[in-house]
Image (cartoon, rainbow over all chains, first blue to last red; front, side, top):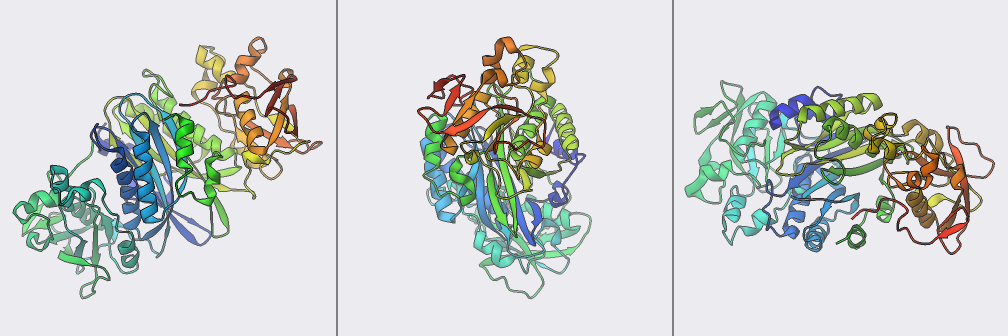
Length: 285
Length: 285
């Protein structure tokens, strides 16, 4: 099965209401008047990191990309559960894990350690506490709202390609936790950019039943000569969000376009309608 | 690193109070006057299942062993998050997942689907709601209490070896959810048996600072001629628990021994003191 086929099959199973039909980044549990936000991401050798990667970077990234999903919900991290396959440089993994947990003030809650053969797989479940309800979703963008993005897009790509200046953006991405918490009470839609700005914008437009009109010259890219590459690459973990027109974001962010009524395509880039997600970014499976 | 060395290294990281120093089966989060119980277990090809295993059984077992950990805390399942590696018989995996989730009335909440190369790894995070506080732990056994076990021990071993009668005990183990909930308010210590009765009894005795004195003839084994093998094999997912003397368990269970003051060894089997965990059961890593 492809990832899309597998997801479609999963949607035929009994689903929790907080699963949001498996169309959002996190699951929600309402309990005792609070909302917990849960995320589970997996990283596998060869698929998500190279065989010779420093496992300290892998551990950092595993924490960061899970916390980035919590950030997109404006959730404050409570703790993480780790699934660890022994057999690589476990000491380096511990060091990267320590760096990430210490930097973001997130404690380890438990997990599972296994022996494994062949390629290593690491999994993490991050648990956070919503700071604002309703919890932001991909489906909250509305026509008339402006589209924003934090940070600079494409830095992870340049870091992956060997740029010393952007190396850390690829190896040790920084989840926008405080930005997400500041934005949660006022955004229309919000998500983190993991698979590329254009693809993720396409998805948010689809989920919201709107069209996103984006001006490429307005997008803060790390390399203007390769703007399209920057917007198609993933791994940036910046926040993409919409705000009512005239509303200034409480965090550093650039306005890159407008949400309009749904037209023929979910995405318009520089007046060109893009109806298919192909080649907009990184598609799994 | 071995699993023990890795666990020791994890204990030097920032730990959540609900992690119980990584010495228990589940993590606890207290929120809004309730207690959530979380468990994360991983199953890897070659380590936990054979390459030619039916992935429907693997999916069932992944759910069952996570729910078994919740059962040992008397927690009622709320939902699960799945980490799935595509590439095996994904359709069979979905079917086993559907059977387990439907049987135990547990909804899917979310997760992650990845492409992978080589051996498959599947992870699951189970979230439950504690039905009784304090939540039972491994460390609650006290001298004078009686030791009980549910069900019959060694069935999974016989099923693994090819016994038709016990095949399902190995392939589709049944977590003792209702038993755990009934027992939680009254037990001293409680845990599920995943690595073998003797090894897990040794661990509970250690965690409780007591000695467990067990009579092998009192243990309900699936094959009396191979009683020791039955007590050393894992994968039974029955509940091991202690109750104050004279207290009858509200579920079907056999009394197999007594908790006594800590002597030279954590475990006494038929009057023989066993001071080391080696050869008592399945040790990881």
